[in-house]
Length: 102
Image (cartoon, rainbow, N blue to C red; front, top):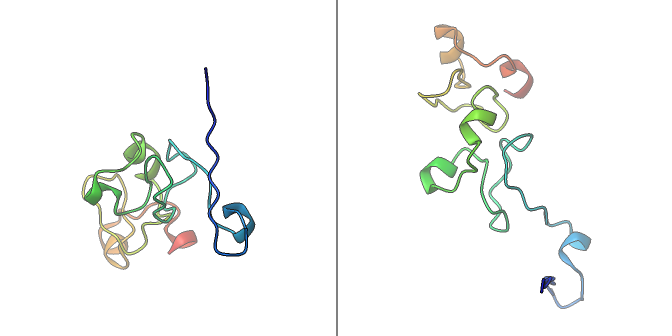
């Protein structure tokens, strides 16, 4: 048997998450989700700090290492390109979308 559990959060006025604008998506991949803010409802994370908390999606490095989306001002040594202001320009290793996001 398969059971579905629905979740309703009440703030005293009977509104559901989606009705008050909370992000109710469940992501399991960083593809197209790099830089999303931390959300405890997600099964894994794609924010810059996920590596510190060991909760990144398995494709975080593959999906997010070539973009500055959600990484402006950050230096990540093992990523192929960087988004740290002025320094990546000096070293010539800025991501191709640096100007767009930073």
